[in-house]
Length: 302
Image: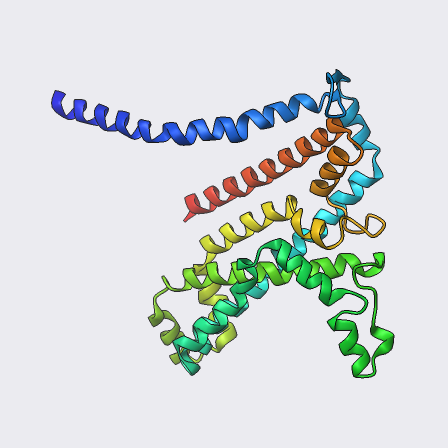
């Protein structure tokens, strides 16, 4: 009995050693910078000299800053384009490729389309942003095509007009995100017993019925992971905005991450930028905790 306890103690100690590098990395790369940023949020500082304590002044300013609240509103819209739409499209495409295309045309056709949809995820965001900047340009592919088929009145300055810029950037984000959702869902579908689909088909269930009664319920873990990760990505979206519109025109695509960048590097209001980052980080963590608790409750019910 003593020997068994000794072995258990030694095993726990050896496992703890493997946690040390990750713990040190977390403290140095995540925790310390976050604490430093929190401290800066209570100061007025231009990046040089000594930070001047101002208490809650930066947070008070947030409450009356139209730019900040406008950026939060845009974040809600980007949640739709980064989470809701890609998850729905990715789920339907994954089910089609797995349950229909693979059976009708073969595995290689399904793999070809899967790779094609995933390609935007492989491209660096800067490359994708520049590419779409050319496409959406007033003299880009979209407007040239519209004019070529006689639809000159539909040609617009897609990323230079505040009316269309947000929708144009959202389209780019959907294009990037769909591949990620598709691949995760197809990986989840590979663990589902094919006999379930065969039995449902024999019972007369059409493709939509199989999607609703088999695919979606059994893909619940994958759906949760995709929704959580894309939601976090939507809350901190920066690169597509930076590359395509730089928050413009007229702040039409401004988001908290870009607003933080703008105040840090352009206006040099480092303390205010830090306060925006603190609010953004707190919101992200809070939503992640809520989602994880919800998932835990769902698993306990099952």
